[in-house]
Length: 223
Ligand SMILES: N[C@@H](CCC(=O)N[C@@H](CS)C(=O)NCC(=O)O)C(=O)O
Image (cartoon, rainbow, N blue to C red; front, side, top):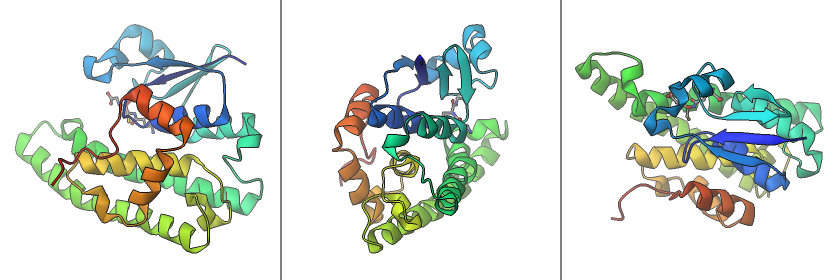
């Protein structure tokens, strides 16, 4: 199986990027420069007409959407235990992954790209400020999930659902909490998620992706 992952540094594509490394998959990382608008070029739009990363190309066929891509990776690399085999546990991991992707992630889009939602500059400032509050609440929910996983004696987020393995939930927690720091939400206030992310960043496969994407875990200026 040939695999190419189209990713942008620091974007949500970090989630499948880390899963592929953690699975030990042979894949070709293909960087897309979102700040240069490469996603709007005809070549990229032939791959993903929605002009977004990530895209996983497998044997010439493109798959989009994090939930679909990470499920595909989990199914192809079962030894990595990225999804539980128990159907109830699997549904609960997917319910939280879907929430991160369809609710938490778009909140940040309202902060980072308010111009997508209105051309009015004053309204953009209102949208941004409102969504910073929403995002902080959502990050608190994620923090509580990690707290639940740890209280259950687990190491990884999905331990909250009885599946103590590294999953897309951990990778997304890192990405969303890091994005919070871009929005001025201090990640150190998340007493479960912040230490969790720092530990994750030490794992060789995750460290490799952090290095390839040249990421800092927190974008807050040191106090
Ligand atoms: N629901 C989509 C979200 C993808 C998405 O929002 N990608 C962003 C980066 S995090 C993007 O490519 N944005 C480029 C743009 O909007 O121009 C997924 O799961 O793949």
